[in-house]
Structures are given as C-alpha cells and as structure tokens.
View 1 (tube, helix red, strand yellow):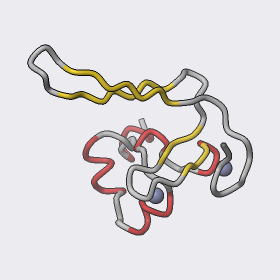
View 2 (tube, rainbow, N blue to C red):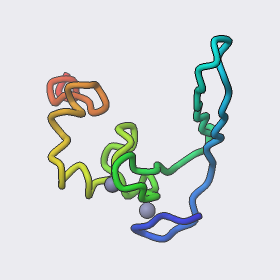
View 3 (cartoon, helix red, strand yellow):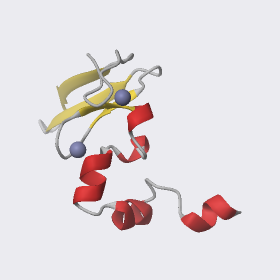
View 4 (cartoon, rainbow, N blue to C red):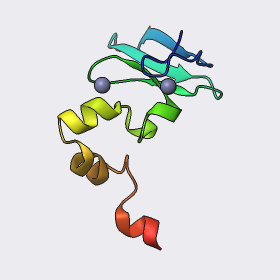
Length: 88
Ligand SMILES: [Zn+2]
Ligand SMILES: [Zn+2]
C-alpha cells in the first residue's frame, strides 16, 4: 500500500472485525495498529499518509477538507485543535 499523494510505502494496518451483539445487531469494529501512519479518507476513500494530511485525526484528506470546507465542523467536533488552544 502506498500514499495516493506522495506514493511512499505506508506502515500499519486496520483490522476490520464484524461481529454480532447478544441481541443480534451486527457491529463492525475497526482497530488500527499503533504504527499506522496513514488514513483512509472517510469521504473519498483515498489512502493518504500522515505527512500529506493536515489533520490525520479527522479522518479526512486535505482535498476533502478544502472541498467541503470541513475545517469549521472538524473544529467543532474536536478533530482539529481550536486556534485558541494552540495559542495557550
Ligand atoms: Zn504521502
Ligand atoms: Zn478525501
């Protein structure tokens, strides 16, 4: 696997597990390995390494953040540190 922007090899992986709760509700859980240095964009499914992503913890690539103007929303939900936090 490689980054769709800089094309370097990425490390780490995501384990997707599907299971059922006791009441039969299907659940998909995703566990990422601790050395994972990339994201799969929630919006466009692009594989982007952390070096090419401004806000890897948001789960969105730069392109989608710009395209959908997600900065305000991501700040609200806490995926991006607020400007005030950075100044403190
Ligand atoms: Zn990259
Ligand atoms: Zn994207």
